[in-house]
Image 1 (cartoon, each protein chain N blue to C red):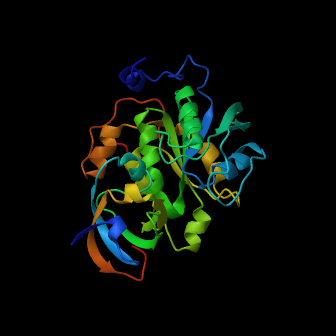
Image 2 (cartoon, rainbow over the protein chains, first blue to last red; image 1 turned 45 degrees about the vertical axis):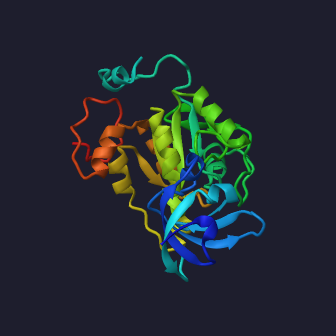
Image 3 (cartoon, rainbow over the protein chains, first blue to last red; image 1 turned 45 degrees about the horizontal axis):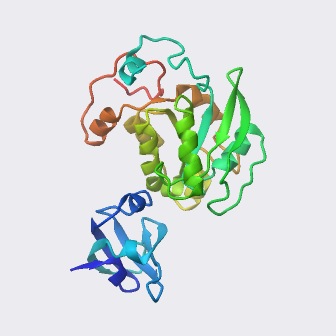
Length: 80
Length: 214
């Protein structure tokens, strides 16, 4: 199942399959297709989303996050 | 002088004559990987060091005596990429642009090596002479992370050393490999990552010293 990062549940992990829009800013932070991410925080009212990508927490604005599509792998207790 | 001429110029001792920046050392790396701590170790300077990213937004300069020669060392603000998105990255990109003939010492965080490789690649694409310092190796060991520097050195064809700037571990090794910094052959790097053996490089000035260049 595919979702954008903004739709991930807390603790849900997935593999990035597509980045829509401007991806250079995210690429340099380690958000690339094929990477696993785990959602850890999402702020309400279109606030930023924080994910763990390879041991590093990355916070991204809602608009950027809405362009990142992941294939869901399930819930996880460990890091993504 | 084109890249090809520079790469294959026959063994001249100073292949980068001209700009006067050949001896300059740029510390380049992601925010919060220990560039300023390394800078202080190398120069005896007093750049502000703290345990959160974005401490350095301006440029600190110092000097280092190595091989009986003084080098200017420049502590570049942390950047995730050389296409700037904030003030610190703008300064970083500007300095890298101003010193194309300097030696780039790319500093990686040993606990998060992969994140720094993106910036390293951007530096290599600019055809700068480059050496790699895998810093915070003490923190990596504490986390049980081992870094195969020999493999990294072989893949990149660049000198790679591990350092712990806060304790001083590896600093002497680092100074010792600076003169081996060289321009990476990105085609060969791609070949090696793909598991192929790239054609042997012609007589290059300098050598990473890994002994496996063929």
